[in-house]
Image (tube, rainbow, N blue to C red):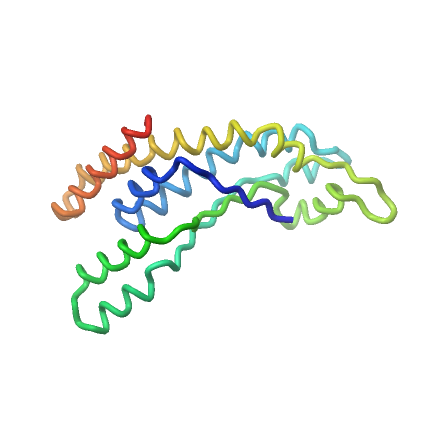
Length: 189
């Protein structure tokens, strides 16, 4: 079972992420999601029934970042011979205009140790359900979402500082990173 959460009020942070280099933005998101998922994982470990302890030990947090938005625009600009700069601008414009998210966070039992986690959570024909993930989410979702907002702003500012210090980045990239930092500061980071 997948729970989808839609967030509002993150538009400035999303724009700030779009200003950062792609790899930097991906790493910022990954670090933020893993940190925000940890309170949920801790609560789930606390609530998980213990037989041998494998289920409790297998609860992990991971983030998956994938973003296909803008790929077609990038490819079209490259095929048209507009150059890499124009293609990157087309990709960023497409991402700014698109709604939705490209980041996913997983909190739960990891395979192989916790392969039976769903059977414990929902029960079987022979055993009663012993929910631990859903109650953990219900108890910690507000804290996790607040952590995402605060940590994302903080991570964007730190990434912008790293980009500014980098000798490999162009002036344009450094300028975009400073814009990202300003947007993150405006949101309260």
